[in-house]
Image 1 (tube, rainbow, N blue to C red):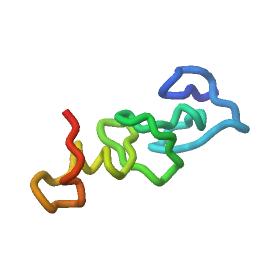
Image 2: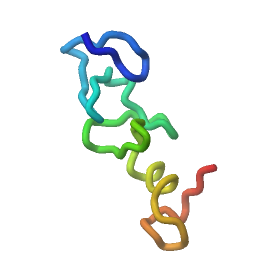
Image 3: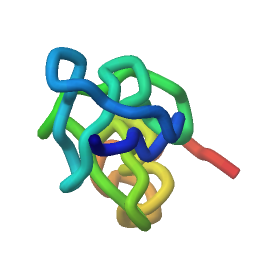
Image 4: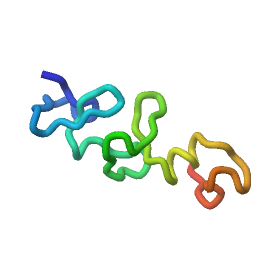
Amino acid sequence: MPKCPKCQKEVYFAERVTSLGKDWHRPCLKCEKCSKTLSPGSHAEHDGKPYCHNPCYGAMFGPKGFGRGGTESHTFK
């Protein structure tokens, strides 16, 4: 039985969501920065961790500078 990468508990077929090549519980598949619940295929990955496309992934790992990628209003430290 596969284990969820977030909570390390077993993931049963009825509750399984597959993303990033792993099986997750639906509530465990969240953005690492803002904790927004994600759906498979609608997020980005960095170092094996899921991030929502906007604003988290773009602001943290996208191009920097004014007017690049629509992330100029979001700054994370």
